[in-house]
Image 1 (cartoon, rainbow, N blue to C red):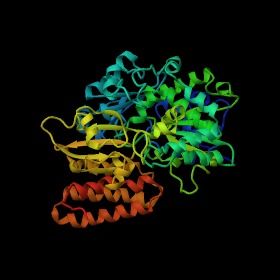
Image 2 (cartoon, helix red, strand yellow):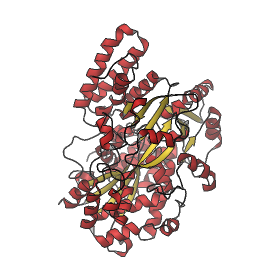
Image 3 (cartoon, rainbow, N blue to C red):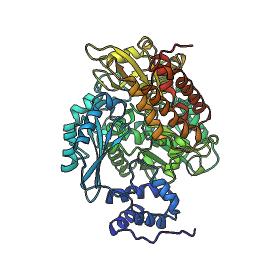
Image 4 (cartoon, rainbow, N blue to C red):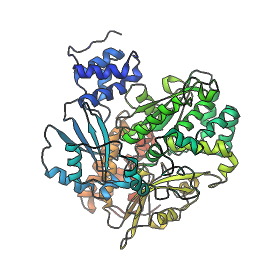
Length: 596
């Protein structure tokens, strides 16, 4: 390729950062890791650094620039070496994020050493207000700050913060994030707080890698049969049968096959996969390896959102230890079968939670969704057959392999087997991650969380996050199953449960949801790119106007919602109006409306 590179040289530091991450490799899929390397070293991606990356990877500068400017955590303009991203999304707003932001604003300019900016959900919803601190330079690190104040943010930005605090210091915080930790009967959460997530031998002592050993003994066909007979479906929102997906890739004739763990958990209100990766990373390594075994893959990827530095560190550490112990590599568990994993870091793009956008991101392209069909099971990563599952879905495989499909299906209901993780936040007394059998009612889950605070009453529950559906207090008897929520026009989604009491400004909540989708639309298709903007404009008009404007604006919102739902390429546009429409219809926000 005849590249036209700008006549600008990279700094020695930028050149060294790029060369260190690339080594002798020069494939396009290393573009995002190279961009991360430069940003960590210099705090931004200069024209010279971008030109050097383009030269090393043979990528046209316009395409590389398009990728660098696609992600919220990357910068192509010079900025201070310390940047703090302060969450102003739904859960953090309910616990004072706007006050923190107001206090930061009153401090004035932050100068050359550090700065701050607003951020969408950081996946720390049970312990907000939250912030993500990025520090570039020789001691580069990313660190999540929780339960923040303006003062604690300033102290961390100026004085430094440790991305990996001592385990003894996080024990109390872990108990608050997972109130059920240590209770009998848990499945996916049974090791949380009981097994050191940083030590391979601790995981092995608790039966770790026994499922992989059994999978190797059973063989691929038998494992797929067990997965199919368990009737497990995906836990990320689409609820597609897992066994059917695995079988399609296993039977595909095109080679090679790939496995991807989608850990780009960015739905506002959702943090389940973060806790699983932070507290049980070896289980994820084992589950992804089993997926590779049964689908005929020799290479897998775990794509983790960039806002999860501790999860990234823990999963990378677990991968290194597993490889050193022969659980990954050229001879997995002495079986003669080859399988290895690579951990890839996202860079701040909600849309990359969509499987084809994630695939494009790994390939070094803008994280924009692809038209489907063809589906990833036939044309996925590098146009080869690919399995894509999220963290929670994959971890269920360990029990299915060890205990059998019948034991797994005995939990839950006929249409929703097993247990489900729910990320609960907002106006509840004990926010956190909860595991319950499918069929548990929403009210029973709220009771586990202690309900709303004293003197308050329940106003609404947002089930499924920003792309979900609002439920009224009289709908909390709904069983938390795929079939139960479907019967009332809702969906479980990713398992986010945002609770709002009677003190919450619901119009403000809807405006924040609309702003979120406007910002996060990748802009590829017109219905979503324009529809999300017009949706927010209409809501702001309703919020500012009187009853005379309500009828026309509500009709306009209905029309916008219909167009986005019917014509958008991917689920972002198709669900960008779901929560807003349900609130207008069920909760009487802005103007009273009745169910048809």
